[in-house]
Amino acid sequence: MIDKTEIECRFRRSVDSYEDNATVQKWIVQRLVELLQEYVPYSSRTLEIGCGTGLLSEKINRLWEDQQFWVNDLVEQMCRKTIDRCQLPVSHGLNGDIEQIPLTGKFDLIVSASTFQWLAHPRATFAKLAAHLNTNGWLIFSTFGKNNFKELKAVTGQGLEYRSIGELSAWLSSEYDILYTEEQIHTLKFSDPLDILRHVKKTGVNATSLPTAWTKGRLHEFCEDYKIRFLTDGYCPLSYHPLYLVCRKK
Image (cartoon, rainbow, N blue to C red; front, side, top):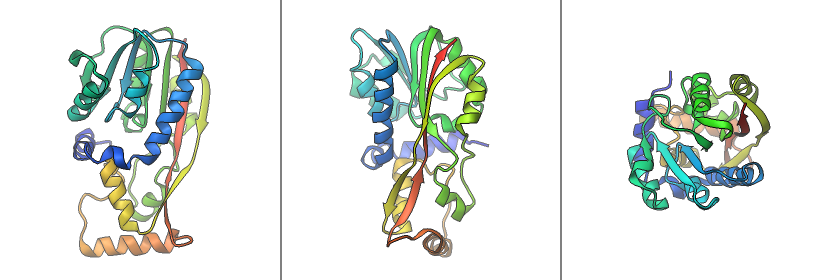
């Protein structure tokens, strides 16, 4: 079961360190912007789900003139930070769990980067979002696939149950035409497993990937096991598996 309270807590702690450590997330943002430019000629009303510190928000805010732009995040501090960064009206910050909070009005575009892996009920959420899209409105998002953090899961036995493009497409197909899908693998290299732990802590993505408490013995065992299993050419790898989906409301 996905614990949204724990997720909020981990990301709240990473507000100040997130952007300096979100290497892969920055690559994902750039790819999403390319897809937006390719598929969406114009959006007068846009909603971003999981805005974080505003990496994607800042770019979306510049895409179209006269665009009304709303941002959402589970973490109130991140929502406020993005509002300030993009100089948006305070009322355009929608703080809270997108699966729970009410939405009003309809949008031309709903976009999200690296957030939908946290959805507890994706099918219901996709239907909810479709109800708030104009006809032929766009849902364009990235999430993570089955091989995301595969090394951490192998060593700790913990991690999210990531969904495949096939699973996501099945949940989306009743409400949307799926025009494009893509998946990538990005592998970061670290000199030591401890650096991997620091990396995931500073980006907040350790909400379900790691134990909540470490003993000295457990930490030593983790590092040794990680090296035995995955050390290659002097580096310890960590895999990210981003998925991209471009969907248009039927």
